[in-house]
Length: 256
Image 1 (cartoon, rainbow, N blue to C red):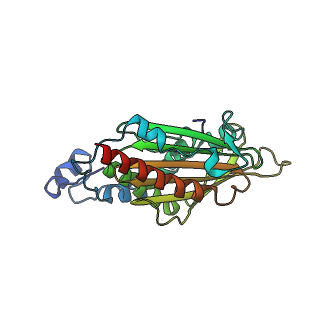
Image 2: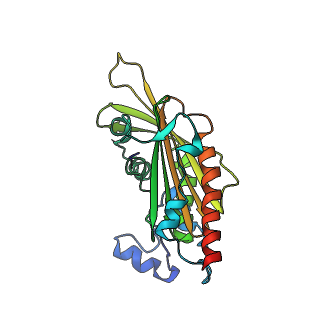
């Protein structure tokens, strides 16, 4: 975390494709991963109504949360979290799990379709950092990402990864159970536990990662801390942020 996801198979072409790939006509193609299948199966949401104005850079900035929203001890961030490179920069042989690790490391879950704004806050008492992003996006793109995230507790519930600085770590992925946020949402809680040497005590980094769709726009939140995350920080930030984004959009529509 820095201060700082397709396929239609035409039945009539299966035999041709199979032969071209060196498979006998009756052979089946390799099975896609559940996460990839879930992503492809995600229904595309209708496009935003023609009367809905696009999110502007000023609106995206206004929809961010700030340190005053979360209260003490949250403050504006002073830099990248000390645990960021040591525990998030890691490699595994499972493609969906590797994509998750890369998303956590780069904070790039969505490709914006327009303006975006970001803020990062620190909680020095808990060695925690929260990154909050507002994107102008497309509903169908956001829904595909939500479907991929939703499948990860099944495909990457527990796996091992090799870090660059802390040896082998065990990664556990679970649904965080968030409900009633925006038009669609998905959250995960990821625990990464490593021992840099046999004599060291294990170190656990806990990360919440959440995507919420509000119309065609999206909120992406990642919050991490060594040990346990500050209670309710993720939910509090999202409750405030979703309402703020909706209010900003309503104001913009009324002024258009």
